[in-house]
Each structure stands twice: as C-alpha cells, then as structure tokens.
Amino acid sequence: MENAERLPSYDLYIGGRWAPCGAGERFPTFNPFTRQPWAMISQADASDVESAIAAARSAYETSWRATSGLERAKLLFKLADLVEASADRIGILETTDNGKVIRETTGQARYLARVLRFYAGYADKLWGKVIPLDRGDVFDYATRESLGVVGLIIAWNSPMAMLGNKAAAALAAGNCVVVKPSEHASVTTLELCRLVEEAGFPAGVFNVVTGDARTGDALANAKGLDKISFTGSGTAGRLVAAAAGRTLTPVILELGGKSPNIIFADADLNKACTGAFAGIFGATGQTCIAGSRLLVQRSVYDEVVSNIVKRAPGIQLGNPLKQETEMGTVANEPQFNRIIEYIASAKSEGASLMTGGGRATGDGLEDGLFIEPTVFAEVSNDMRLAQEEIFGPVLAIIPFDSEDEAIAIANGTSFGLASGIWTRDINRAMRVSRAMRSGLVWINTYRAVAAQMPFGGVKDSGFGRERGEEGLMEFLTSKNVMINYSDDERDPFAIQT
Image (cartoon, rainbow, N blue to C red; front, top):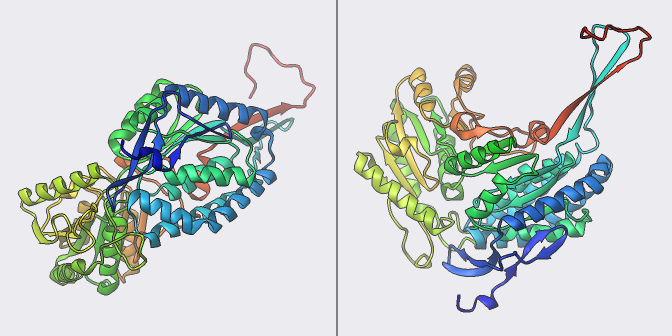
C-alpha cells in the first residue's frame, strides 16, 4: 500500500514484548469517517497464537498462579488509574478506529476503569466454603481457583467496554489472557498493552494477537486454553463453539440481539420516546442491546411514531471526534453494505418507510460511512426487519393491542438478550419483566449499564454471563477437598458415605 510505511504500525504483544508476526504480513485499518487507512496491524498466524498461549501458560505457572489476590488487586487498581488518566486519548483512538462518537468512546474508557476497580475489589475475596457432611468425622471444604489461560475474542463496536467485561474479571480471578481484537478495531487494545506494562503486570499475563478471521479461527481451535470468551455475531459464535468443542474448551458466548422496547399506553411518552431513541440511534445502532424493535400499544401508536419520525432527521451527524456530533459512522464498509441491504429488504417486504432509508449526505459527510436514522412503521413481527439483527440505525415499530400480545411479539424471535418496558403500572412492569425471555430487562430506561449487574443472553443470544459477580465466577473453577480424621477402619470394597 502506498505510504503504508508512514502510518503507525503495531506488532503483536506476546510475553511482555512487542513481536512481529511470524509471516510478516500486515494490513491497514481504516478510519470510517475519512475512509482512509490510518494504522497498520499485524496478521497473526497459528504459530503466533501458539506462542501467545505458551507465554500465557508460562506466566501462569511460574508467577501469576502464585500471586496473591492482594497483589492482583493492586495491579488492577493501578491499571484502572492509568486507563482513567488516558481516557481522552483512548477515546480519540477508538473513535478514529470505529467511528463511534467521542462522547461515548471516552465514556467507555472510563467505564473500563470502573470495571477494573470493581473486579480488583474481588481479587482478594475469592472465598470458598466449608460443607457440612453426614459424617461428623469428615471435614469438607470447597475452594475457588483460577482456570489458567483464557482466550478473549472481542468485536469492533466497543473494544474497551468488552475488555472490561472479560479481561478485568479474568485477571482478577487469577488467569492469564490471550486477546484477539477485531481486525476492524485493534488499536485501543494494543495501546492498552502499554498501560498493562506500565502498571507492572508480569510479562505474559496479558497478550494480544491481531488479525482477521484466520487468527480467530486459530485461537478457537488452539490447544492449551482453559476457556474462550467470545463476543460477536451468531454465525461466528457457532464456529467458535464448534471449534472449541473439538478440544473440549468451555466457552462464553455473548452474541446478537433483536431486543424489544415496549411502550404501553400508560407510559410517560416523552421519556419513552427518548428511551427508544437511545436504544436504536445511540452508537449508530451498532450494539447487541439495540432496541431495534419498538413495540407500541395501538392507542398511542400514532403519537409515538409521529414523535420519533419528527425527531430522527434532527440527529446531528458529522465528525465523530466532535463533541456536538450525536451519531457517527458505521464502523466499516462490509457492515455499511449489510445495513443498506436490510433497508432495501424491508421496503420490499412492505414495511412503511417513515424517514431515512439511505446513505446520509451533506456537508462534511461525503467521505464517511454515514447512514440516515431510519424508521419503519407498520412492521409485522415475521418480517426479516423484525427477526434478524441489522446492527445499524434502523428502527422497526410494531403495534400491539394487549399485554399478552406484547409479550408474545417480544418473545417471538430466536434472540433473547435485552428488553425494555415503559409503563407507570408497577404490577404490569413486574408481570411483563418476568415473562420476558431475555437476560436483561430495563424498566423505564434503556441502554444503561453498570459494573455490578450481570449481562448476557438466552436462546441465540448466547450463554454465560459478563460483569457483576456472575461474570467473575465464569473465570473460576471449584475444587472440593475432603479430609477424613477418624480412626475407623474402612471396607475397601464399599464406597464411603
């Protein structure tokens, strides 16, 4: 590539050192606002992945496994301080890489610091338990122990937030990690390596291998991992799970969603419409929790549709590095083309296009991968628009009459990640939230996160949990110890109970 030598170039980070990939292959990463290459990333092959796993295993067996929870906590707290101090710079890098607005990426960098601190507080509190047995002369206890080496495969839409969800918990639990970021957004993960080093983590505890699907495939198929945590599409997740199954490597899968955001007639409609906005147009709709299906009770349907259709064209698109920009670009060209195809499909299915529906144009938008905020009304739940994850700023508004119908529509997809309920009736809120087949339910809010709350889905949205105490437990295993302190002679041919 012309002028490639002038771009910032990143090696792999293995065993505490920056190492060129074995094959010497590099590829450009593109700024989706300018559509110009801005950094060169290494293409790791299977031998590089093996080296990273070996470095992690060596670090685990020689130092990290014996490092006390108190010392791990100190390192995580130090890393959190460094991340927080670097949040503005991290935000700029991430926005340049994936086109999300700077107000979100800097916030996600600070969120990473928050999650690091949350799990740091757990590192020296991984208590086991004493288990009373039927026999009084047997002492039994169970401990919580680290797994060893875990592979973390993350997506392009929120690298820093995903590293908070995965790496912070894995490290606090005493594991070493090998991270594979998306080829579309690798820079912030690589820059985090410098902060890990500055914080004083032992070499090999945190490793990063970059590259396209070939690298991810090598990691998913590798021997020597004790667990894999994957965030991405359902298609890729199935491949990861199948590959991991061949080596009996357990997996955590955080996959897609087609989340229902339900507005009942008794809701505060102004707040509900704002919540609908946040659910689909925040992050340009490129989030697994996007409230891409807006279910609205028929008696207020026209009012809600009118509100959203009037407001959507006023969303300020532009340079995502500017604070005043409200919606940035689509992160990469393949995803841009995918969204455009879904919009065309929705039109052919008979959904009513109310606003948007194409590439956004205008001053300052010429080169970027911008899509207009798009709203379809009179959508039926059997349309592709309502059943398949689009991962873009495309809202499907579906009418319903009764509470039971809303529940049936909400649960009527293969996904089950998030859902939202807008109502002033606490009884209804409790009934409907209990009926939702999703891992997360928001009531009178949407797209809000916290380090303490567990996150994950059911059905095709995956399995396992991130964040909260449940997220920590995913990276620990239980060991039982039984001590017989009696002087009784036993029958060697009968099991003791």
